[in-house]
Length: 147
Image 1 (cartoon, helix red, strand yellow):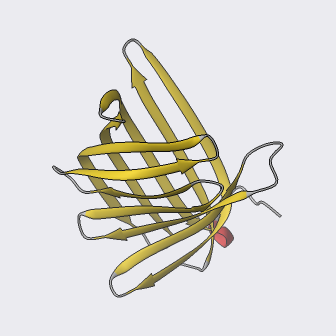
Image 2 (tube, one colour):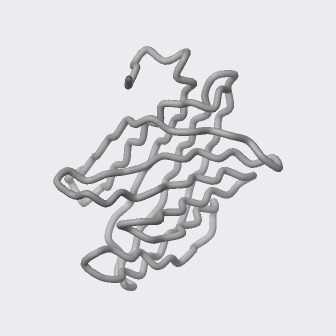
């Protein structure tokens, strides 16, 4: 896979009978080092100057999402395990509990895809079940071009 990628992230929270979904597509960088895959991209909120730099580190049966900038966090997803994470926002600190029930990584010649299912707690209280799908696709092979 090439270094220049398009990163697609779709997150869904299941809140009782309602679903709350968000999807972003942005330019990013991909590389592989020591049998781990790394996807880097920046995230910006409309009307806010600061950005959050994101690193997704994909290893065997384990994914780490590291956020630096406007939001600060290091979240770990590991199937069958619960991990805690501090999630620092401009509005304050949130203690997250993440229990991952499914983690699936698919590697192709020009893309890598990740599917995660997990339950989310905030400050010790169950909030929702979640699914996140992340795909990094080589920009030269992508139908969508963000120039």
